[in-house]
Length: 524
Ligand code: 5AD
Ligand code: SF4
Image (cartoon, rainbow, N blue to C red):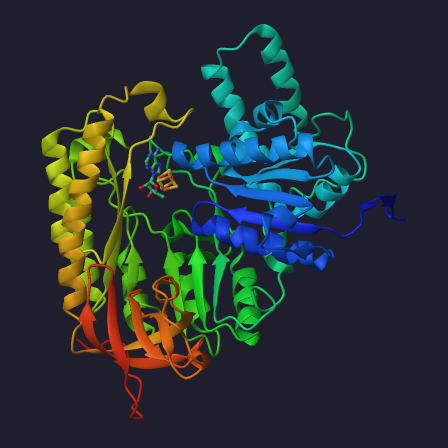
């Protein structure tokens, strides 16, 4: 460990293991962190046992995900105490932000607690940890939200309150009074420094798909959701920077870009003279030369306006796929969830989407067992699922999250076994809906971007050869397609004649004859 002429800490290069839980935003964050650690000279390893630095990029959306991290940290802390005193342990992302100092107190072996807005500091935090400094680096925006929450919600002793008040004010180190040499890179006007630092292809190799963040945070405050508390207020990125990042990725060989935001369709940039809406951003990104596919996730049914649907219909490279979580089909539950739309408005949006964007493919998320959910409410969700014809749906059992309005004000009154039954019932409905949806593609030809050898085939013991292995790819509508072909097709676009369907995927054969790729790629 030494101090560079700029006063920054430098450290010996280490083997770093990172495990990612949760959503696509976390996957992107981990990708960017990996790039920045590699740029700092560290080596990324897949083997947890070999690593000198173990990082967990965590999710707080449901309790289950958090429990997994506690269990991992318990094991790592014991290993560190007994055999590996120099092991550096870090928690990144939403759990770090949600629990902050409490997490560091609970796991004495933890060196780094780093909120999602502070990830650009990670190389410095690792250097500090190697010198024996423990750091809790939290995003000030979400701290503000935590402060508000503490005012109304904290039941600790005066002494605890005083102590927590201190770290809430400083947001800096745990065991060391000052944090000399660790620059505070948090700048609310420039939250995308890590995104902009990424060079070309996402992992330095030849990849054809990449995520690009267009906004962070969320202002919706759905009553069950922790995201606004941990990811802070909604902030859109400057459009020119998004386009610049996409250009760079495309120049490096990426052909499919997915724009990411918690409520991506709420994207809005204004600098006084001009306002850029999400549909304008889509048009600007779609214009990047040689970008073959443009996707976006996740959308909120509120403000999914016709200008977005129209630009999807107009631009050949915008994929006709919308992840549009309804969460519930019942007005009573939607109201208590603070979703700000009714069942009727959701149904009407689906009809508009189908009318304006030919062949649009829809996917949903549902929560079962929200406080006060009756059998009739549950039936309404099943009805919405059937009516919407989703390609796939994620179904979650309601999990009360500390600090959210639902956890504070609504008793978690649906018994666990009822949640489980409703979960299974909705999954069974989705299975029927998904099967009908996928079957409707049999006999059609789809343009498929080949992602690589199928993991499922490997599990089934299928022996691949260079000429023929089981490959998996995605259509423009985000359908999973399995087919046999040479491994060299990975990253390529091929035309697949669909022959079979399950509730989750399609199977087909490569069409050999040269054909012009159709406008939509999936004639129906
Ligand atoms: N309990 C269960 N599911 C939740 N989700 C968000 N918060 C909760 C919660 N407290 C689900 C929503 C969201 C998805 C990412 O996670 O369905 O769309
Ligand atoms: Fe959570 Fe609702 Fe924001 Fe989605 S829109 S991140 S569910 S608060």
